[in-house]
Length: 422
Image (tube, rainbow, N blue to C red; front, side):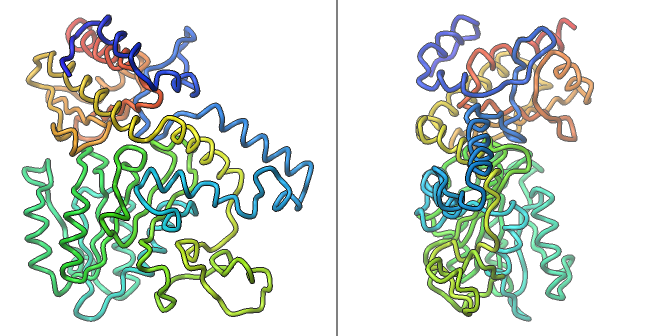
């Protein structure tokens, strides 16, 4: 697309945008004058879908009317409530419905997955992770190593990026080749939270499985942002949160994928709870654990319905909008932001996110070589909601469901004024 650096051009793109009607389905934080803030922080917490309040209130009403009978008599009964989420969630991660479950939170799910897929031996016990993984992932794998009596300083293999910026698959391959007889698990965050780089998950999975190494992905910054094709690539597992690009509310539930090839393996180690037991005999209470032959077998407890209602509200918006359409707009929106930033001709502005649209989602990580956090503070005061990451990086994520091309244009105008006129 040939972009132009004018407000009129931005507005023309918005007029043609088939997703523009969804913007009005979200609540925006307001400035003092009542206008919307420019919200680019969906990579941290997505905006609230207006439908969420409706659905949460409906559950409260059902609880009031039915009491315990709401498990079976509510319009959306609570007993199978998680099942209403699996099909739309599966589309977003490229999986079969039986491979996807909404449950717990991300780090809890990560530990549950490592119970099943990190099965070390004395020789084959190491875990590989990228050096700039989100801290919770690093803490998780370090604690798993220590739990099994191993030393993270010796048994954690670190994938380093080139020149402290982009990760190269050739370096990954070399690490796996070097440690192939020692690696028990590879865990990669599929979209790097700092740079926004999206990794080639198919390549990573194929390389690991060639040496019979289990592989899992943290999709926290990828789910709802890129299409990971989890079933097709054959990953053993994946985990994610739903409060970023999936807009399900602060601290909301996480999601989990387990490839169907593992579902019928009753010998696979896992922590067990009654909600993973065969549904037809679950309430007999005194039977030995009989796992459901799907990802549902990894459930522990009956789900928190009030939180699930917000997830359902967001997934319905995704379903109506169409995920392929969302991804298409994402590339255009981010491409326009990239164009406008480059048009500033400022050598002190460095976009550290890959230039290839297929190697990133909607986030651009912008490094300001001559600035400190005061620049970010001034943007915040001007009504821009983004986030700051040391050193010198502002992450800006125009989310295609609720951000417009005019939003992107206005952000760069504010930035220009602060840097060159302020």
